[in-house]
Structure formats: C-alpha cells, structure tokens
Amino acid sequence: MLTYPQISPVAFSIGPLAVRWYGLMYVFGFICAWLLGVYRAKNSKTFTRKEFEDILTWGLIGVVVGARLGYIIFYDFKLLFTDPAAVFKVWQGGMSFHGGLIGVMLFQWIAGRRRGKSFFEVMDFMAPLVPPGLFFGRLGNFINAELWGKVTDSPVGMIFPNAGPLPRHPSQLYEAALEGVALFIIVWIFSAKPRPRMAVSGLFALGYGVFRIFCEFYRLPDAHIGYLFGGFFTMGMALCLPLIAIGVILLALAYKRR
Image (cartoon, rainbow, N blue to C red; front, side, top):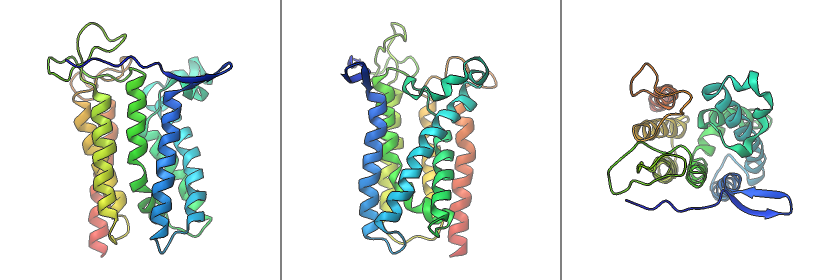
C-alpha cells in the first residue's frame, strides 16, 4: 500500500489571500499550453503567434466559465436554486472537463472567426495543447484528496483523508497519466505531420473519451449522484460516450474527404 502524501491544499498565503494548489494547476496548464502553442505557431502556415495568443486568452476564459457551469449543470444542478453564488466559487473545486471543453470551444470559435479562422482550423491547432492542462488538473484533485477511487487491496491503494479507513485506487493519478501524459503524446505526435481537417480534433475526442471511461471503472462517482441506472454506469461515462462517437465521426469524415 502506498502512503498518501499530506499536502496542504494552500500553496502559500499573501496576507489574507490564500493561493491554492488547485488554482495554480490551472495556471501551470495555461503556461504549458502557451509554450506549446508558441512552438506550433512557429511551424504553422495558418497561425501567427499573435493570433494564437489572442485565441488562447479567450480560451482561458472559456475553460474556467464552462468548467464551472458544466459541473453545476451536469453534476449538481440543484445548486443553481439553493446557492446560485456557488457558480462563482471556483476555488472550492467542482470543475467539469466536458463543460470546460464546451466553453473553450465556444470562446475560441468566436475569437477565431474574428481572425478569419474556421472552427476546425482552430480546434485542430489547439487540441494538442489541452492534455497538459488535464494532467495538472488531476494533480490538483489529488492534492485536494477528492475524486478518489474504489476500495482496493492492490499495492497502489492509498488511504485518503475523509474517505474512510480502507485503501482506495488513486484514480486521480490514473487520469493524470492517461488523459494528461498518454493523450498528449498520442495527439502531439499525430499532429506533428500534416493531417486532414478535423482529424486531430477527432483523435483528441476519441482518445479522451476512451481513457476517461477506462478510469471511471476505478473512480467512485460523485456521492450525491452515485451510479446511474443502478449499475456501474457513471455520469462521466454518459458524457464520454457522445465524445467517442464524435471523435470516430470526425476521423471518418476527415479521411473520407481527403
């Protein structure tokens, strides 16, 4: 059994202001996206560095707004009525990837249109920059000791604070490894060569959906939702199935058109 490292959720304090690791992880993800995007822009015939940075800035706004709203809508809808102000309490955690994906696509599409870029032109360029942010986000979940996994007797089990006395799968680390590291390697290498329009976006959607569903088998669902349909099916799986279908369709269309 592994020992869970007791890390304070607060990275440091400046007077009354407490800077949390969870928030810093978004900053780290943004910095990685910016560095990788600048590199891609140098080798791109369709994006200048300035165009990329403008679109990325709007994407940052979209991911925060969309992730928080997505969590409220998909996972805790009653908060809109019992505590509407909770929508703005992003420092408390509760951010949805699927909501963030919708938010970033919407904001970046609008920003891209103003610069004469098509939707998939923007998405294909940006898709390889997303997984590092997912990696850091899952590390933030791990530090917060949230979204832990099922009880296990395997050597990788950990006893999480407030999760009972039994060891559990560190599912946050599984997701960091697959949705962050593995997905980045796959999509980055794939996008390094010229691909038909929509192919890179399709591979990202397919890869994320498959990896997330795999991890859902080891992760406990949100306690206030539980399993859907009385079985093993989770909300995360339900949201990823359409994503997988979209990924397959985009890849098929991309190579059929070519």
